[in-house]
Amino acid sequence: MQLDNISQPVKSRPDELVPSRYAVQVGKIDVLVISDGVLPLPTNMLGHNAVPALRAAWLNDMFLPPDAFDWSLNVVVVRSGGRTILIDAGLGLDPNLNLPRAGQLVRRLEAAGIDLGSVTDVVLTHMHMDHIGGLLVDGVKDRLRPDLRIHVAAAEVKFWESPDFTHVNMPPGFPDALRSTAKRFTKEYRSQLRQFDEEHEVAPGVVVRRTGGHTPGHSVVRLASGGDRLTFAGDAVFAVGFEHPDWYNGFEHDPEEAARVSVRLLTELAATGEQLVATHLPFPSVGRVAVDGDAFRWVPVFWDY
Image (cartoon, rainbow, N blue to C red; front, side):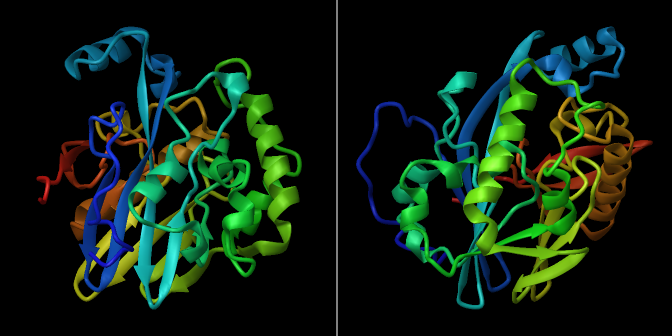
Protein backbone atom coordinates (compact mmCIF):
# COMPACT_ATOMS: atom_id res chain seq x y z
CA MET A 1 0.00 0.00 0.00
CA GLN A 2 1.57 3.26 -1.13
CA LEU A 3 -0.81 5.82 0.37
CA ASP A 4 1.11 8.57 2.14
CA ASN A 5 2.77 7.40 5.31
CA ILE A 6 -0.10 5.25 6.49
CA SER A 7 2.37 2.98 8.28
CA GLN A 8 3.81 5.81 10.33
CA PRO A 9 2.79 5.77 13.99
CA VAL A 10 0.40 8.45 15.14
CA LYS A 11 -0.42 9.69 18.58
CA SER A 12 -2.89 7.36 20.22
CA ARG A 13 -6.24 8.70 21.40
CA PRO A 14 -8.16 7.10 24.27
CA ASP A 15 -11.38 7.26 22.23
CA GLU A 16 -9.88 5.45 19.21
CA LEU A 17 -10.02 1.88 20.45
CA VAL A 18 -11.06 0.31 17.14
CA PRO A 19 -9.49 0.47 13.65
CA SER A 20 -10.67 3.27 11.40
CA ARG A 21 -8.83 2.48 8.13
CA TYR A 22 -8.33 -0.64 6.06
CA ALA A 23 -6.10 -1.06 2.98
CA VAL A 24 -6.99 -3.05 -0.15
CA GLN A 25 -4.99 -3.60 -3.32
CA VAL A 26 -6.88 -3.76 -6.63
CA GLY A 27 -4.20 -4.69 -9.13
CA LYS A 28 -2.00 -1.60 -9.28
CA ILE A 29 -4.67 0.60 -7.68
CA ASP A 30 -4.25 1.44 -3.98
CA VAL A 31 -7.46 1.64 -1.96
CA LEU A 32 -7.93 2.80 1.62
CA VAL A 33 -11.34 2.48 3.29
CA ILE A 34 -11.72 5.07 6.05
CA SER A 35 -14.47 5.25 8.66
CA ASP A 36 -16.16 8.62 9.02
CA GLY A 37 -17.85 7.34 12.17
CA VAL A 38 -21.43 6.20 12.73
CA LEU A 39 -24.95 7.60 12.52
CA PRO A 40 -27.53 6.50 15.12
CA LEU A 41 -30.81 6.17 13.20
CA PRO A 42 -34.20 4.53 13.79
CA THR A 43 -34.39 0.92 12.66
CA ASN A 44 -37.52 1.55 10.56
CA MET A 45 -35.20 3.39 8.18
CA LEU A 46 -33.97 -0.05 7.11
CA GLY A 47 -37.27 -0.90 5.45
CA HIS A 48 -40.17 1.43 6.07
CA ASN A 49 -42.36 -0.61 3.71
CA ALA A 50 -41.60 -3.88 5.52
CA VAL A 51 -44.02 -5.69 7.80
CA PRO A 52 -42.90 -4.51 11.28
CA ALA A 53 -42.78 -8.06 12.63
CA LEU A 54 -40.51 -9.19 9.79
CA ARG A 55 -38.23 -6.21 10.31
CA ALA A 56 -38.10 -6.93 14.04
CA ALA A 57 -37.26 -10.57 13.32
CA TRP A 58 -34.38 -9.58 11.02
CA LEU A 59 -32.97 -7.24 13.65
CA ASN A 60 -33.25 -9.95 16.29
CA ASP A 61 -31.53 -12.49 14.02
CA MET A 62 -28.70 -9.98 13.49
CA PHE A 63 -28.41 -9.30 17.24
CA LEU A 64 -29.28 -5.65 16.64
CA PRO A 65 -31.41 -3.45 18.92
CA PRO A 66 -35.08 -3.11 17.98
CA ASP A 67 -35.40 0.67 17.93
CA ALA A 68 -32.14 2.32 16.76
CA PHE A 69 -28.63 1.27 15.83
CA ASP A 70 -25.42 2.75 14.44
CA TRP A 71 -25.11 3.03 10.67
CA SER A 72 -21.52 2.97 9.49
CA LEU A 73 -20.16 5.81 7.36
CA ASN A 74 -17.36 4.73 5.02
CA VAL A 75 -15.37 6.72 2.48
CA VAL A 76 -12.56 5.58 0.20
CA VAL A 77 -9.22 7.04 -0.89
CA VAL A 78 -7.89 5.71 -4.21
CA ARG A 79 -4.49 6.12 -5.85
CA SER A 80 -4.25 5.49 -9.58
CA GLY A 81 -2.26 7.04 -12.42
CA GLY A 82 -0.62 9.61 -10.20
CA ARG A 83 -3.96 10.89 -8.91
CA THR A 84 -5.27 10.75 -5.34
CA ILE A 85 -9.04 10.41 -5.37
CA LEU A 86 -11.40 10.83 -2.42
CA ILE A 87 -14.67 9.02 -2.99
CA ASP A 88 -17.29 10.83 -0.91
CA ALA A 89 -16.42 13.19 1.92
CA GLY A 90 -18.37 12.11 4.97
CA LEU A 91 -20.80 14.04 7.13
CA GLY A 92 -18.74 16.94 8.39
CA LEU A 93 -20.30 18.83 11.29
CA ASP A 94 -23.99 19.58 11.78
CA PRO A 95 -24.57 20.45 15.43
CA ASN A 96 -28.31 20.86 14.86
CA LEU A 97 -28.65 17.10 14.31
CA ASN A 98 -26.56 16.08 17.34
CA LEU A 99 -24.41 13.44 15.60
CA PRO A 100 -21.12 13.68 17.54
CA ARG A 101 -19.77 10.26 16.52
CA ALA A 102 -19.88 11.05 12.81
CA GLY A 103 -17.84 13.55 10.82
CA GLN A 104 -14.47 12.00 11.66
CA LEU A 105 -12.98 12.02 8.14
CA VAL A 106 -10.58 14.96 8.31
CA ARG A 107 -8.79 13.86 11.44
CA ARG A 108 -8.74 10.23 10.28
CA LEU A 109 -7.17 11.27 6.98
CA GLU A 110 -4.55 13.11 9.03
CA ALA A 111 -4.03 10.03 11.21
CA ALA A 112 -3.44 8.03 8.02
CA GLY A 113 -0.82 10.57 6.90
CA ILE A 114 -2.94 11.82 4.00
CA ASP A 115 -2.66 15.55 3.42
CA LEU A 116 -5.83 17.21 2.13
CA GLY A 117 -3.62 19.12 -0.29
CA SER A 118 -2.57 15.86 -1.95
CA VAL A 119 -6.13 15.06 -3.07
CA THR A 120 -6.45 15.74 -6.80
CA ASP A 121 -10.03 14.58 -7.30
CA VAL A 122 -13.22 14.03 -5.34
CA VAL A 123 -15.93 11.72 -6.63
CA LEU A 124 -19.41 12.12 -5.14
CA THR A 125 -21.77 9.17 -5.30
CA HIS A 126 -24.52 11.69 -4.52
CA MET A 127 -25.09 14.91 -2.61
CA HIS A 128 -26.68 13.79 0.64
CA MET A 129 -24.98 15.58 3.50
CA ASP A 130 -23.20 12.46 4.82
CA HIS A 131 -21.34 12.35 1.49
CA ILE A 132 -20.44 16.01 1.02
CA GLY A 133 -20.37 17.54 4.51
CA GLY A 134 -16.67 16.88 5.11
CA LEU A 135 -15.82 19.44 2.44
CA LEU A 136 -17.82 22.08 4.31
CA VAL A 137 -15.94 21.81 7.61
CA ASP A 138 -14.34 25.14 8.53
CA GLY A 139 -10.84 25.46 7.07
CA VAL A 140 -11.05 22.42 4.79
CA LYS A 141 -11.54 24.31 1.52
CA ASP A 142 -8.46 26.44 2.21
CA ARG A 143 -6.37 23.26 2.53
CA LEU A 144 -7.55 21.73 -0.74
CA ARG A 145 -5.81 22.24 -4.08
CA PRO A 146 -7.15 25.16 -6.11
CA ASP A 147 -7.32 22.84 -9.14
CA LEU A 148 -9.27 20.13 -7.27
CA ARG A 149 -11.79 18.42 -9.53
CA ILE A 150 -15.11 17.29 -8.02
CA HIS A 151 -16.87 14.72 -10.20
CA VAL A 152 -20.64 14.38 -9.84
CA ALA A 153 -23.51 13.38 -12.12
CA ALA A 154 -25.22 16.32 -13.79
CA ALA A 155 -28.60 14.84 -12.83
CA GLU A 156 -27.58 15.07 -9.18
CA VAL A 157 -26.70 18.74 -9.35
CA LYS A 158 -29.95 19.43 -11.18
CA PHE A 159 -32.01 17.51 -8.62
CA TRP A 160 -30.74 19.55 -5.67
CA GLU A 161 -31.81 22.80 -7.30
CA SER A 162 -35.35 21.82 -6.26
CA PRO A 163 -35.25 18.46 -4.44
CA ASP A 164 -38.32 16.23 -4.10
CA PHE A 165 -38.83 14.65 -0.66
CA THR A 166 -42.32 13.23 -1.23
CA HIS A 167 -41.21 9.57 -1.24
CA VAL A 168 -38.66 9.58 1.60
CA ASN A 169 -39.26 8.48 5.20
CA MET A 170 -36.67 10.41 7.22
CA PRO A 171 -36.48 11.50 10.85
CA PRO A 172 -37.55 15.11 11.54
CA GLY A 173 -34.96 17.69 10.62
CA PHE A 174 -33.18 15.65 7.99
CA PRO A 175 -34.93 17.02 4.86
CA ASP A 176 -34.13 20.60 5.84
CA ALA A 177 -30.54 19.69 6.71
CA LEU A 178 -30.05 17.81 3.44
CA ARG A 179 -31.51 20.63 1.40
CA SER A 180 -29.46 23.38 3.06
CA THR A 181 -26.21 21.37 2.96
CA ALA A 182 -26.56 20.62 -0.75
CA LYS A 183 -27.34 24.27 -1.48
CA ARG A 184 -24.30 25.47 0.47
CA PHE A 185 -22.05 22.88 -1.15
CA THR A 186 -23.09 23.83 -4.68
CA LYS A 187 -22.54 27.50 -3.91
CA GLU A 188 -19.05 26.98 -2.47
CA TYR A 189 -17.73 24.44 -5.00
CA ARG A 190 -19.63 25.13 -8.24
CA SER A 191 -16.51 26.26 -10.12
CA GLN A 192 -14.77 22.97 -9.32
CA LEU A 193 -17.62 20.65 -10.29
CA ARG A 194 -16.93 18.35 -13.25
CA GLN A 195 -20.36 17.07 -14.23
CA PHE A 196 -20.92 13.94 -16.32
CA ASP A 197 -24.04 12.41 -17.82
CA GLU A 198 -23.80 8.62 -17.50
CA GLU A 199 -20.17 7.49 -17.14
CA HIS A 200 -16.78 9.10 -16.70
CA GLU A 201 -13.22 7.83 -16.26
CA VAL A 202 -11.59 9.76 -13.42
CA ALA A 203 -8.18 8.03 -13.59
CA PRO A 204 -6.82 4.82 -15.13
CA GLY A 205 -9.14 2.02 -14.03
CA VAL A 206 -11.37 4.36 -11.99
CA VAL A 207 -14.79 4.83 -13.61
CA VAL A 208 -17.83 6.51 -12.07
CA ARG A 209 -21.22 5.46 -13.45
CA ARG A 210 -24.65 6.93 -12.74
CA THR A 211 -27.26 4.46 -11.46
CA GLY A 212 -30.04 6.73 -10.21
CA GLY A 213 -32.54 5.32 -7.74
CA HIS A 214 -31.40 6.48 -4.31
CA THR A 215 -31.19 9.96 -5.82
CA PRO A 216 -31.54 10.82 -9.54
CA GLY A 217 -27.79 11.24 -9.94
CA HIS A 218 -26.63 8.54 -7.56
CA SER A 219 -23.49 6.87 -8.92
CA VAL A 220 -21.17 3.97 -8.19
CA VAL A 221 -17.42 3.82 -8.72
CA ARG A 222 -15.87 0.79 -10.42
CA LEU A 223 -12.16 0.05 -9.97
CA ALA A 224 -10.37 -2.36 -12.31
CA SER A 225 -6.69 -3.23 -12.67
CA GLY A 226 -5.22 -6.43 -14.01
CA GLY A 227 -7.72 -9.12 -13.13
CA ASP A 228 -8.89 -7.39 -9.94
CA ARG A 229 -12.11 -5.41 -9.54
CA LEU A 230 -13.84 -3.54 -6.75
CA THR A 231 -17.04 -1.49 -6.69
CA PHE A 232 -17.79 1.32 -4.27
CA ALA A 233 -21.58 1.27 -4.25
CA GLY A 234 -22.34 4.38 -2.21
CA ASP A 235 -25.93 4.06 -1.00
CA ALA A 236 -27.05 1.55 -3.62
CA VAL A 237 -26.53 -1.26 -1.09
CA PHE A 238 -27.55 -1.48 2.58
CA ALA A 239 -27.00 -4.31 5.03
CA VAL A 240 -30.61 -5.47 5.02
CA GLY A 241 -30.77 -5.32 1.22
CA PHE A 242 -29.00 -8.63 0.66
CA GLU A 243 -31.75 -10.68 2.28
CA HIS A 244 -34.56 -8.21 1.61
CA PRO A 245 -33.80 -6.31 -1.60
CA ASP A 246 -37.43 -5.20 -1.83
CA TRP A 247 -37.32 -3.21 1.42
CA TYR A 248 -37.22 0.56 1.01
CA ASN A 249 -34.61 2.64 2.78
CA GLY A 250 -35.97 5.83 4.30
CA PHE A 251 -33.46 8.09 2.51
CA GLU A 252 -34.38 6.96 -1.01
CA HIS A 253 -35.99 9.62 -3.18
CA ASP A 254 -37.29 6.95 -5.60
CA PRO A 255 -37.64 3.76 -3.52
CA GLU A 256 -38.95 1.52 -6.31
CA GLU A 257 -36.13 2.45 -8.69
CA ALA A 258 -33.59 2.19 -5.87
CA ALA A 259 -34.68 -1.41 -5.25
CA ARG A 260 -34.30 -2.23 -8.95
CA VAL A 261 -30.84 -0.61 -9.04
CA SER A 262 -29.76 -2.59 -5.99
CA VAL A 263 -30.91 -5.92 -7.41
CA ARG A 264 -29.19 -5.27 -10.75
CA LEU A 265 -25.95 -4.31 -9.02
CA LEU A 266 -25.98 -7.21 -6.56
CA THR A 267 -26.74 -9.65 -9.39
CA GLU A 268 -23.79 -8.30 -11.37
CA LEU A 269 -21.42 -8.41 -8.38
CA ALA A 270 -22.43 -11.98 -7.60
CA ALA A 271 -21.68 -12.95 -11.20
CA THR A 272 -18.27 -11.25 -11.36
CA GLY A 273 -17.13 -12.15 -7.84
CA GLU A 274 -15.56 -8.71 -7.48
CA GLN A 275 -15.16 -6.98 -4.14
CA LEU A 276 -17.78 -4.58 -2.81
CA VAL A 277 -17.49 -1.59 -0.49
CA ALA A 278 -20.51 0.55 0.43
CA THR A 279 -21.07 3.59 2.58
CA HIS A 280 -23.31 2.06 5.21
CA LEU A 281 -22.11 -1.54 5.44
CA PRO A 282 -20.26 -2.29 8.69
CA PHE A 283 -16.64 -1.10 8.54
CA PRO A 284 -14.42 -2.02 6.75
CA SER A 285 -17.25 -2.94 4.42
CA VAL A 286 -15.11 -5.11 2.14
CA GLY A 287 -16.68 -8.33 0.92
CA ARG A 288 -18.39 -10.14 -1.91
CA VAL A 289 -21.93 -11.00 -2.93
CA ALA A 290 -23.41 -14.47 -3.37
CA VAL A 291 -26.81 -15.47 -4.71
CA ASP A 292 -29.00 -17.09 -2.05
CA GLY A 293 -32.24 -18.38 -3.56
CA ASP A 294 -34.30 -15.37 -4.60
CA ALA A 295 -32.11 -13.01 -2.61
CA PHE A 296 -28.43 -12.49 -1.84
CA ARG A 297 -25.83 -13.17 0.83
CA TRP A 298 -23.07 -10.86 2.05
CA VAL A 299 -19.65 -12.55 2.40
CA PRO A 300 -17.22 -10.34 4.33
CA VAL A 301 -13.55 -10.74 3.53
CA PHE A 302 -11.22 -12.23 6.09
CA TRP A 303 -9.17 -9.34 7.51
CA ASP A 304 -5.78 -9.12 5.83
CA TYR A 305 -3.08 -8.16 8.31
